[in-house]
Image (cartoon, rainbow, N blue to C red; front, side, top):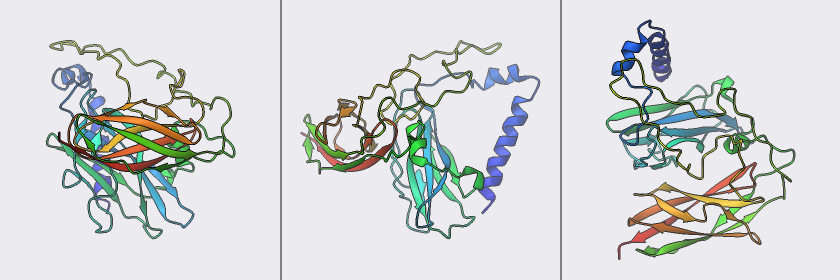
Length: 308
């Protein structure tokens, strides 16, 4: 039960010992931590914390870090993407299509009220490396308002998350596109601009990468890439989403990515419409997220894309 926890603590201790070594510059010559990578890197699952349900069961909240800055990765459910719960199999609704960089509070898994001190482990293997997120009911990790945590904003008094209903998507034959229609509803809150959580001091601007002493070559500072629509980092700039209720889409599972137009579809008379364009045949699970720019709700729909 405690094996994974001991491994995590050992890894943290090793990291502390490493950075405290006096000859850090020598280490940088062989371990280029300061470099950014377009492709070829691993995926780190993340456990964000847990919350209580009204029926006394619990929700375990997960996200991930795809360490690549450009490459998206498809890792189907199985031995390389496993999240096993009480012998029910490896599939607990986790993503199989991973966008670059951080994606916080991507999904949640419900566990029973008698969960106790058991662990829930999400393991992902990419490029021969396996990384895990170990979830358990650590008291300090309880989240009182997971919906506000997912939005990256402070909750507004009385505001309830909007609701969404997806219509069934018809099959698509390449090079055709799918029309995605959703029915949404909301309580009209919040009014005005939602309050944004301030970034910590020192995080207002991205760091400038510098080469380590004696590095063979200087690191490449990649241009700023547009994030996937589900990114939940706090914003200090203008919110790109339209005022009121809007819906955005991502590929949750599938062999390849897709492009969505518009990226954020504003609700008109309780309905939104988005066009999804695919380049590869296969079965896709698309996730729609409706937001009032403070709280959000997600739902999924399956789309079959056929060859010409």
